[in-house]
Image (cartoon, rainbow, N blue to C red; front, side):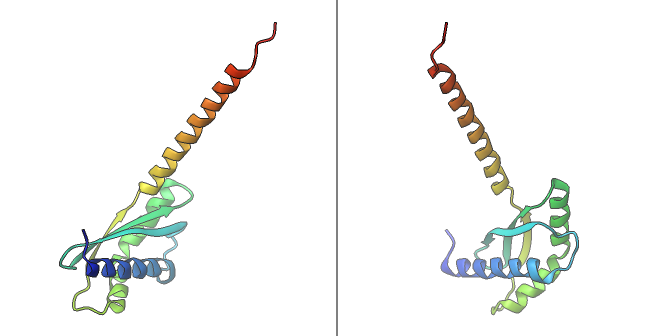
Length: 130
């Protein structure tokens, strides 16, 4: 369970990384909707795992955007260092978060199964005419 300090640092990191990616990186590979979904900070506040979700036109565009963000990690780190008021600035480890994408796929499967169930009920409920 994260401490209060870890939670505060995680919020600062989430906001700083989001702002850096959306407003301070001018890489044409970064396109689509990019969101920082989760930040986990170690107990000593030295390392932060940042999970980024990317919604783009296709998988290749999403991969290029994550590559560009990963390439700009040092610039994001510098931006974060300017925003933090602590002795140490955590080292960022960037990960691509696929949980939202998986959730959407599961919701589509549930909707498809519900539609099939409704169609099956309609076919069995209609009386047969001779």
